[in-house]
Image (cartoon, rainbow, N blue to C red; front, side, top):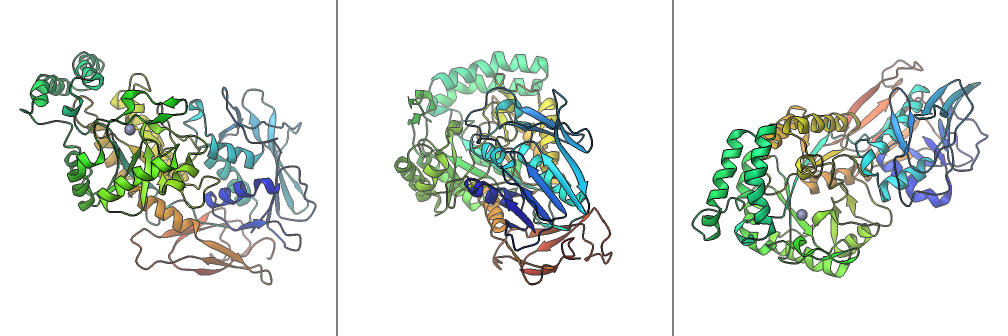
Length: 547
Ligand SMILES: [Zn+2]
C-alpha cells in the first residue's frame, strides 16, 4: 500500500494518476504503516517507510507550453518536464540528470532500513499538464505519462517491496488495438467540381507521378489513379461507379472481422464553429449520416461500431445533443462516442461533450504528427467530467503521408508505426488508429500500409476492440477497488465488479517481487507474476512493513 501526501488541490490528479498506475494506495493516514510513501509538494515526511519518494513542488500546472521542455534523462528514460525542475548538488545515487546541463534532477540514498528518492519535478502538476493541454508536437513521440509511472514503479520494485498492480493490458493479449475511420468523403460525386475534386485531380496525376518517382506509390498505383481521373467525368454524370462510395465494403474486406469504429458526420454542408467564430466553409462535409444509412446498417450488422464525427459538439452542448441524436436514430445504439471533425477541441470540450451525451471521446491526438498528446495510450477520465472517458488517438493516416505533415514513404511509415506498436506493447494501453474512409481508394491508395499494420497487430497478438469495447475494458479496470485491512496489513482484497455476460477479455493481476506467492519468502525476486483477474480475490502480501 502506498501512502500519498499531497496538497488537497491535487486530489483529483492523484486519483486519476492511480487509475492509470492501478495499484493499492490511499491518502496518507498517520496511524497507518506504509511500505511506500509518496511525498509531494511542500510536505515533509518524518515517519518510517521502506521507500520514501519525494517530488519537488512547482507553482502550478503549465497553461501553455512554448518551445521544447527540459529533459530529465537516465540510461532508460528521457522524460520531458513541463512545469519546472529543481536540481540537486548530489553526485551519488543519481537517477536523472538534466539532458542539456548535466545537473542532477533526481537521486536516491539510503538511511538505515529506509530508501529515499528525491525527484526534482512536481509529479502531479506534470500529470495535470499532460491530461489537460497535452504535449507539444516536438515531444509527441514520448509516452511521457507512462515514463513517470515506469520510474516510480522501478523505484518501488527495486526497493524490494511487493507491488500489486492491474496493468493496462488485457489478459492473453499484449495490448489493445482500436481501428477507427473518420468518414469525411463517402462520395466524390457529391463534390461536383469543388476544391476537393480539383485537389483530387492534381494529386492523382502530377502528385501521383511525383510519388511514383520517389517510391511513395507503385507504378501500378499511379496507373490506377490515372484511370480514376479519366473516369471522373463519367462518375460525375452517373455513368461510372463512385469510387469513394464503397468505403464500407473496402474496410470490411481488408479488416476481415477485426471490427472497427466509423465516425460519421451527422449533417451535410455545416462547417460549424471554431474558437474564433465560423469555421472555414470547406469544413462542411458534402454528406450527412442519413446519406450513408445503408452503409451504417451494413457495418452495424457486421459487428462494427458507429460513432459521431462531431461538427459543433465540442463547443456547444445543445448543438451536440442534436448531432448525437441524428447518429443514435440511424444506428440504433443509445451509447454513442465521438471524434470531432478536424480534431476541434479545447479545455472545456470534455465537459461540453459529456453534457451533449457522449459516452466517450477519441479526439485527443495530433493532426500533423503521430504519438502521445496526453503522454499515454491509456484511456483516461478528463478532470471535471463524471463519466466520459477519453480514448486518445495515436496514429492518423493523413499525419503520416500528407506532404505538409510528416510526408513519409510507406517504408518510413512502417518503421514509425512499428515503433509505436512496440511501445504500446511495452507500456500497455490501446493503440488507436484513424484511417480515413477514402484512404484505401484512389488517389490515396494507402491500403498496403494499412494491411501491413493489421497483419503486424495480429502477429503481435493485439486485442482488436471497437472504441466502445476498449473504453468498456478500461471502465472495468477503473472499477476495481483495492481494500486494505487495518488490523491485518498482510491481506489485501481486490474487488472486481464481475460481469458474467461480459465478452471483454479479463483484467490481469500483476505482482512484482512475489515472495510469498513463489514460496521464496523475503528474497528480492525482482520479477513479476501475472494471473487473470475475473472475480474478487483475497491476497496475502508479504510486505516490508509487515514481514
Ligand atoms: Zn473529419
